[in-house]
Image 1: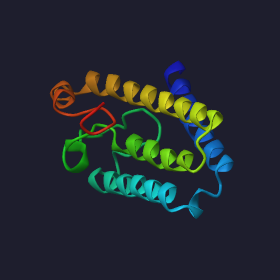
Image 2 (image 1 turned 45 degrees about the horizontal axis):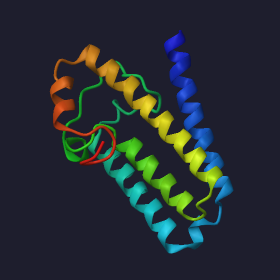
Image 3 (image 1 turned 90 degrees about the horizontal axis):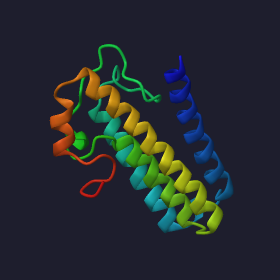
Length: 146
């Protein structure tokens, strides 16, 4: 029960931080650079969903019954492209108005994303012997970096 609560807490925090950033920067759509960064992140997210199988997709950091490890498409380069997508979209939002509060909330969002990714990875490591090999070949969230 504690594990499920933690998962839902992380998802709730992610959406709260995203909502706050969008609210504080509601006019980011009016500037080309922030909007372009947001759109690139959105496209990456769509591509990640396209490369994944619907029965695998889950917004909470839990592994669904019958889920299979996806290692093709964008998943060949990063293990958590949806989290990269969210981070990039929200980076586009804060580029609109770089200030201490935006940066702080964005860093909290990144922390939550990393915690979600780590939880998923621990679960995958328990159920898939292939996951450790996959981890060695790919980056966690940011292609070629992290």
